[in-house]
Length: 392
Ligand code: GLY
Image (cartoon, rainbow, N blue to C red; front, side):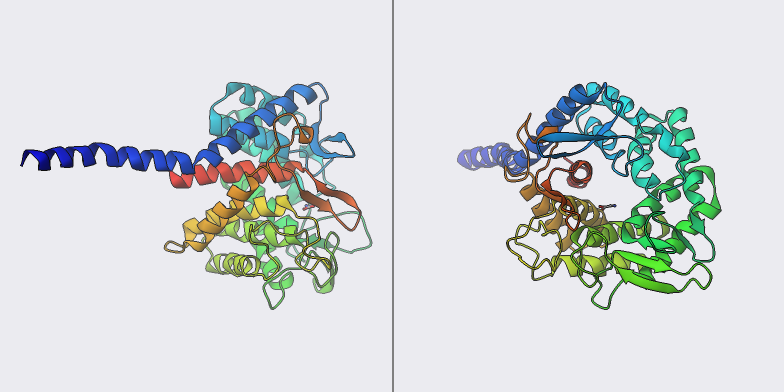
């Protein structure tokens, strides 16, 4: 009898310890990724704080710093906010506020659709974490500026002003809808919400192919609202599946489902996820080559930025399809691989960026196998989402 009670006692005491240490061991990669992200961001902040600019990439041995005129300028401050949220390190908060202020003037830019990327990632996170009204004002001004690019006839937001297109809309533009939704809800601006839904509805009809992959650019006629042409700008060919384009689509429809609960958006997100995750040329580590149809796979550069966007979107998608473990597991695989030494930079190297091996613009021979600020942003966003979902 006595021996039985001793055994129960030993099991009672030791099992939780065993489970605890197993959890601890399996989350080591996560702690390491967060710590390295924190170090790299603080080093970057220290090195660039007097420049008035934000880091974009590290190419040919040099860090490229950009102003609010560049579509990537909001990602570095956004990463600072996320890692401040992950760690509670107030130095990150101070730097986040500083680098966020560098992009304020984007709120007046009428010549781009990228205001969501620029202002929601920086000011959006700033306002979410501090509730400071000054951040809110920038958010509202910028979103009203973005609405000037909405064409009611086409029912979409125009992406670019350069080039020969009449009214080009790129799949990337889906991400800017988050900004319109956040500000639309914040201010009760129904026109903003309707514009976002209309844009997502038209993209769903026009950007996707029968196999649920998407094209990069669709050009519309502003008189008839009809499609003029479909082509690529950063992918391998007009018929190919540019990896980051697919990632933007996955993220875009998952995020729009969050706001609208429209079943069509969830269905589209699941279709895109299936296209990506079941693709025969997606490597085992789930870090895609820069284009699923790049001609020399497996001897093609990877795109860690597409992988990071996918990971973040899949984590969110996993919460909308209870019982489905595929999305969470795929995201976990991506994050563990991005957190390995192959992709995660050592502190002080890689121009102080967190991740290595992204591809920015292959057709232009630009930013091939380099770090990119948006790879880092969606990576740290994913780490936060992962931590929250696992409740650790
Ligand atoms: N939004 C531009 C890109 O994904 O490269």
